[in-house]
Image (cartoon, rainbow, N blue to C red; front, side):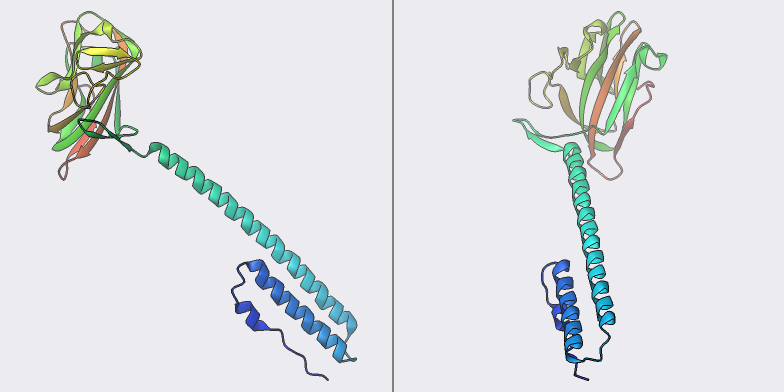
Length: 249
């Protein structure tokens, strides 16, 4: 019996660049060896050789199918990653430069919805919208989503200075779509001004254990909704800002 030349196995260790190329070389080697086996020894069972060749072709088809499935899965994973990155970029804060300050804008850390048809929020006196513990940097914006009703005025700020953020305005001046800042309101937009300055739709403060809230003067409100949006950052360990429940400051 003639000596059979073995498959060139060293080819499988060569970095061809793709899985398919490695398998192509492997199958080619097997087929070459089978042909050598058949041509050099007349005693070889030809049907057996044909069976081996069919098995090789079947295995090639299986590998091709598996490669296509792997490629499809990889494409799907890439699309999912791109979608997740798009979501991440949409909510990641960006920096806006102004003459007065650098400010991070994104989804607020807290949004407190004040329903002034509810006695928790509409009675005469002060109402807490955020509890501040320790030293924090705070940005705050207030928008009216339902027109307020009721006589007399309303203001908002911090404990001890309830006009610090939003000066006293008539309740009925706060209509749906207004941005409430300082002693003025503006329909659908921020009042022009440097961040933190009077009249700015989004204002900044550094607070040390001073809770944020508003005050209803003289007469209770009867209806309307305002939303307070708060962004905050701790300036010392353990500092925090959490949503208030409408109680007195």
